[in-house]
Amino acid sequence: EPDFTEASRFFETLPPDGVDPATFGLARGRNVFLISLESLQSFMLDRRIEGREVTPFLNRLRRESFSFENFYHQTAQGKTSDAEFLIDTSLYPLPTGAVFFTHAQNEYHTLPKTLKEHGFTPVAFHANGPSFWNRGRMYDTLGYERFYSVDDFAVDESNRIGWGLSDASFFRQSVTMARGLPEPFFAKLITLTNHYPFELDEANRLVPEYTSKSRTLNRYIPTVRYLDSAVEAFFEAVKREGLYERSMFVLYGDHYGISSKHDKSMAHLLGKERITPFDTIQLQRVPLIIHIPGVDGRVMPTVSGQIDLYPTLLHLLGIVPSDRFYFGRDLFARGRPEFVVFRDGSFATDKLVFTKNACYDKSTGEAVDAATCEPFKRTAIDRLTTSDAIVYGDLFRFDAEPARKL
Ligand code: GP9
Ligand code: MN
Image 1 (cartoon, protein in one colour):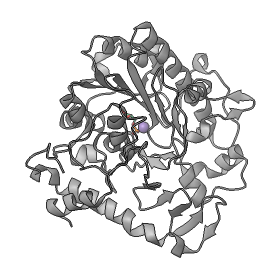
Image 2 (spheres, helix red, strand yellow):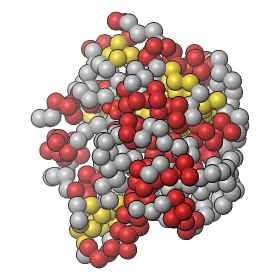
Image 3 (cartoon, protein in one colour):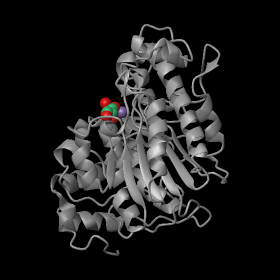
Image 4 (cartoon, protein in one colour):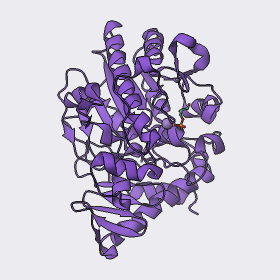
């Protein structure tokens, strides 16, 4: 178990990010809309089901954005909240349980706190109660100035779907509230409609259900289509409120929506014979779309994960982090290693995937000699154990001077 000194030494051994001057500060001074797309997996993008596009708006948006094709979620049992933790702290979530519940009183170095130091107003919008995932407590710890929870939204029979407030109404009401914030603001918005069991009324069903043996997968298709239309309406609202040009938009999928229980139907949908452990890892890819109005984007093949967003967003905002206590790597950095570590010790590089004790060649999906993956195993484990020691031991409380320069 490393102590604080050893943990900080670990960070000191990480090579510095080779800052790309062409993208540094591209979104300087803009508001940030960080949008969690509930249960959205990348395999839905650019896909037609019975001839109909499932995510037409996101497909268009992607072409005018930095669109990451090999971006993976890294969550475990804490689901949505684990994704939030990865992004806000650039630490790994815990192997079991949800860190939002178990370590909400810890000291963390966070994105909202850093942005606040640079003049931003950090707030969160989510139409669920403050006790869900212990957000009420944890958002304080993470440094959000205000949490607009279900109590701040008008919810009635007309705008309720599945778990609660519909995404369309959630976005509309959130944008109105965001309009009154001191700028620049950092607004995290967490959607909800595309959540298991993927319920949707007839009126909101823009495409028919899929037809397979999995009712879950069948229902997922129209709720994903609905989420896409809600995001489109969100952008229209942002434009109407005059916030579009002076904002940056970061959209990410929080975690999978379709578990391995549905592999047979998933194979059917993907036109594959079966889903291998390699495919399962590749199915953990979720969208990451960074849209900066007025800036041409491009497709970004870099192998990456949610943990990388913290340094990436600071880079785009032109902010140099004042410490190096984070695991992520700026996704625009030069010479950045192509590497993503999953919570269970699985990992992916640009060429390999390691999972369930087998090593796969990414270009073929075939298992190869386990020794090929060996050099990365230690690094993956070191990261996870160092991160866990920080969380379990609340090690950042020993960092006397949070803004310490390394
Ligand atoms: C609930 C929402 C969904 O507030 O974040 O939680 P999940 O089950 O996806 O973690
Ligand atoms: Mn979720």
